Every structure is written in C-alpha cells, then in structure tokens.
Length: 185
Image (cartoon, rainbow, N blue to C red):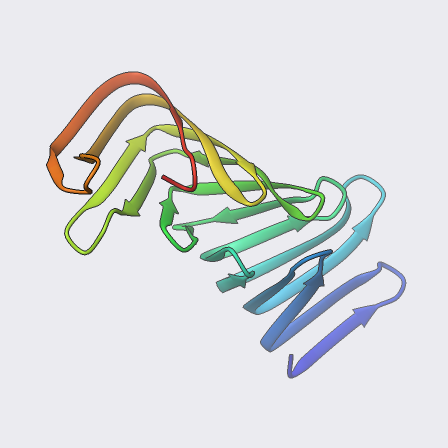
C-alpha cells in the first residue's frame, strides 16, 4: 500500500491507500485488495488479517468481494461480511455472511447465511437458482460437489434431454435440500 504502520510491541500492522495482501499457496496465490488491511498476531486467535471496505479477493478458481473480510491463519478460514459475493467460472454465491474453510490451501467447505443464494448459468438463456436461509457446501479439488440448503429451500433449474435440448423449467420447494454436483453441474 501507499502507507504502512508497524507496531513491534503489539505485533500489529496497518496498510492503507491501495492496500494489497498476497498469500502464496501450494498451487495458487490469493490476492486481496481493500481500503485498509490490518494484521495482528495474538496468543488467542493466532495470526489474523482484517480487510475493511471494498474488499476484493482473487484466486485462480475463485473471485470474491465484500465490505469486509477476516482471514484466520490458524483455522485457515476466510469470513466475508456485508453483502459478500463469491464467483467461480460457472457459480455465484451471495448471502449476508460467507465463511470458507481451507484445507491444504484449497476450498474445503463453505457456510452461507442467512439468505443464501446460488446461481449458475446454464447457458445464455437459463440460470439455475438455489436459495435458503442457510447453505453448507463441500468442495473437492476446488469444485463444488455437495450443497446442503437449510430452511425455506427453493430451487429453479432447467432440465435438458440427451441432446441438450430444454425440456422445461423445474421448481422444488422444501424445508431442506441436499444437492450433489458433478463437474460443477
């Protein structure tokens, strides 16, 4: 960033004005930008980074933005607050708060709530949609493989035949849904 402050006694760092943080991982690199980055090491929570206002996160398979973000090194957890959006090539997830758990430097699981909403673009004509009060997702090799939707679950999806021709739009309503995905579909 353009301005940086470090307090050796409290092990706190503040970066402002075009602040950028880079986290190197085994097979990827996470870039984070924000108005202000705050890092602190303490005995209770370990190393933590907080990013405030207009946060953007970039990785090879995922991008996101939110008003604020916390990254806990010890738990390998990213928490996005206030209107967060997470995007991959084919999926977009929104909610009031999104928590992403990392394992071996890859997305392992995600919690979205309240007011979780997932949309995936079927093609230029249709968008599959899922919503609920809370969502719990599981990833394998950075791909979404299972989605558990809890509370007022609703799904809209477009069915196709073997030749990829539309067969209509389907809706499903339930208190709870578990959706399995293959190749992000």
